[in-house]
Length: 400
Image (cartoon, rainbow, N blue to C red; front, side, top):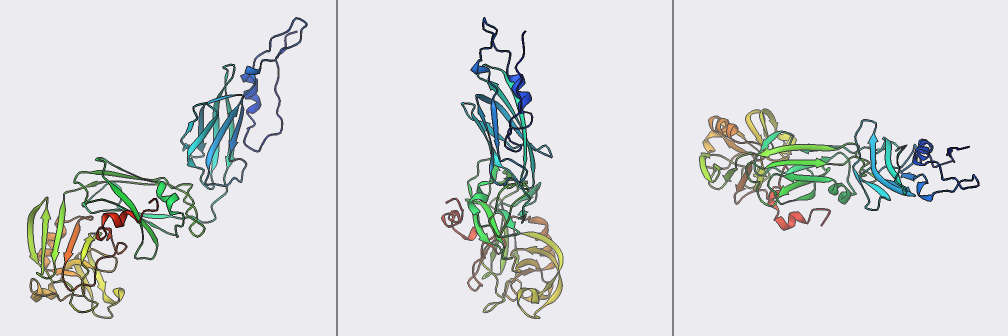
């Protein structure tokens, strides 16, 4: 009598060689040839493919790639999917023996694995398995600039500030992918933000070319930032476009501010900078316009200047975290174009501030010169990375 061989389960590793392995074995094999005495002769090339998946179990450690291996046959495709339908990309080795994911398994995530295999005899089947990773005991989050969809100035860096310390900087930096429409050369650099938190910025070698389209894909989900920082549990992305080449030249010695667009002077206006000889001096170097904040309350106590001032200020354009702005300062009118007499900001008339506020955008560089200043804007005090040479900036990458 002709009988069909039936394969049954043997104990297997938890959630790895899945419960569906037995059905796979059945559909991967056929009736063996029968000898003249009625006994069977085995065909080794029809043995079912054995599939092994790591990680395994319901409490697997995150932060490792998923690996799928096949014995007695080959893998033709592998799909690893989380509960939300997101896939982990990966590649099957040329010999069909192994598949490894490009991304790491994220914490607190359940994954389903579907492996399509082919026996040595050429029969196809599918094995399914599952595993889950433990929850993160600490989660690291990111605040990033610029926001998606914005048009920015030619000095705008990509900037990521982390909630918790990042010790595994090289691992994190490897997951940050910058794509530009024109192949712009640039580098990541790790710095200390003015807030005291860890921060990494990407700046071009020189100012962006107008019209460049930029995309950041921060593929951080499943990356461990270190023992004090915890895990990243999501990815981040932003896209932006670079606008016109606008440079604001501020000469504190001449008390003039000049807007230059595409190499041509648009307008030059009289200003007054920080008072010489003390803590009220302005910063020099390149300060990047961080935000246009409109009318805000400025209080000297927040920047360590005691009770020097507490007033509402119009057309406020932030240049540093430490409190240097360009803004309207009608109370300082006698000094515009004549002397530096502010508490560190670059002041101008209401009319000129209104005009400048309407012309500039975040990311425009303010190139500030002057003999008596507090020093050069630090990379973490706003976007001061431009005050480092290209070589010095590159050295701040964790991958150098």
